[in-house]
Structure formats: C-alpha cells, structure tokens
Image (cartoon, rainbow, N blue to C red):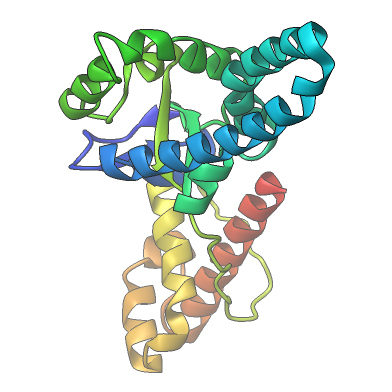
Length: 237
C-alpha cells in the first residue's frame, strides 16, 4: 500500500495494490487522551475489585495481585488492539482505532512495541514526551507509534455499495489505470442522477473506449463499469 499524495491536515490518503483509495482521518491529542482516561478508569475499577478479592489470601493474594497488575498494565491494550479491531474499550467508545501506517490492521509485534514504549512516553513526567510528540509529528504519533509504525485514526463507517444500472458486464478492450477504473465506476454509480441526454453526452466522450456513440456506447460503457465493480467486490471478498 502506498501514499498517493502528501497528507493534508489530519487526512492520510493511501492506495492499495488493487487501486482502492483509503482516506484515513487521524486522531489528535484530545480524543486520544479521553480514550486513555476511559481505559484508565476501567483498568482501575478491575484492579480495585481484584485487590478486594485477593486481600483475603494474604501474601499469596498479594503476589497474585502484582502479577495481574503487570498483565493488566501491559497486555490489556495489546489484547484489545489485536483481537478486537484495533480498539480498547476507551478507543471504541470514542470511535478510534489503531492500525499500521500502511493501512493494515495492527499486529502483535506493532501493538507490543507501541504499548511497551509507553514508559518512554511517560517521561519526564505524566506523558510529557507523548504530548510533545503528538503535537509535533505530522501523523499525531507518540514515541510508541513512531517506533511501531502505527497511527490512531477515526474508525471508518461502512460504505454502501452503489447501485449500478442493470447491464451485462463487458470486459474493457484495453487495460485501464486504477484512476480510469474509479472514474468509470463513479460514472455508473451516479448515472441514475443524470438526465438521459447528459448520460449520452458523457458516454460519447469515451467513444475511443466503447467504439460506439449514442445509446449503444452508453450501454457498453455501463457494462464495463459493472465488470470492473464485480471484479473489485470479488477482490474485497
């Protein structure tokens, strides 16, 4: 997956090898801090409950509590990030998710690195380095994110598959670039919003591709769009 253009503000644009363009909205310091606060309250509540229950076991309970405290502190975010869509309960509540800078889901290695380095983010006191890094990096990354190659983004909402005019799929006679494929699919997706005259006018501009003008050219163009959209759905599946 590659960057298609320089990032503008909080928008990171990536392009997959299949030519699908992803627009990721990066999360800044405020929502990330709120998500961290929610997770802190959740972990604190769990640890208080464990402390009350294990206190009855004396020294054994104290030892068990220290082990669970360590696991809760370091593995709590990793488990949720790897197995629950890149989001701890706090991030999920705020609509955030962690992913690789390439746009891929976060894996064990990256999640472990970004979370184990939180001790460095905490320095010199109360996450001072983390705040400085978030405010001075283009992708709003703390030190752990920079080392792991991860970003925190707003979770994308599912996109509805556009309805295409019912035309038999037609294989394009030449190889189209990803940009040309997207333009053709976009035209078919909004064809129903155009007048018949406008549809014909636009399809006539593609006479070199369709080999026809008028209604035959339009039908052939829409057939190519159906073919391309079908291929992309199969690839996504």
